[in-house]
Image (cartoon, rainbow, N blue to C red; front, side):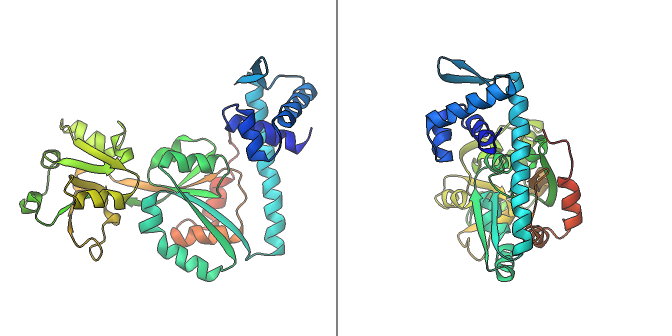
Length: 312
């Protein structure tokens, strides 16, 4: 049994059983991948994949168990490499973070500025996506950790989910919008009288926004969704509708054509989470980045969370 065989079965599983795609990612040949998988199956005495002809069509029951163990072995190999690097040079390395646009654009800049001043020789990579995408990156080990805008991370047994901060929503409108003339706190019905531009995840049935509208028996008129708060604001400026977004994404000194109305009283608060794969090895500067971002997430707190053994 060889490590590269474990990498091959893991990558084939990640590529939805497409051996050609896996071979390309692994910088090897498709026949070579297929041969090594067969050799591993022969050694273990169980099929990892089911086949139709030469094509892989599914993962067998023992195959799921084998791939799960392979993931853990390969993660521990990476941990060994990181330990070696940690003790030979503690201030040089790479930090990869997956996060949403709102986090990257409005929440992280001060942390990143301070971190890069402390660690100028650490290469920092920020990967953006929606919540589902960035959580998958963390789960697959493609990044060191993810900063997610809501609680989907808590549904993954392989990840430790650590709350960073709470946030709520605001409404953004043009400076002459009729909603600004309402002197009382807005209601959901007030908002639903206008087209809404908001985040893509708001349309999910279990989102706080949808739950609030449903409980009020009000149907929102969502005309456009986006991953990017700046895109939402652009279309509000074009009078496409009112914008429903995270309050932190409104910047009065930059959004000079827009006005903000706090609507936090209409929605339950949301929490942004740090998502780290259980069993991961974090270098010293990674712990420091986390604590810069969320001071309550000390090295002790994070280590305890990721040391859980129920990785599945």
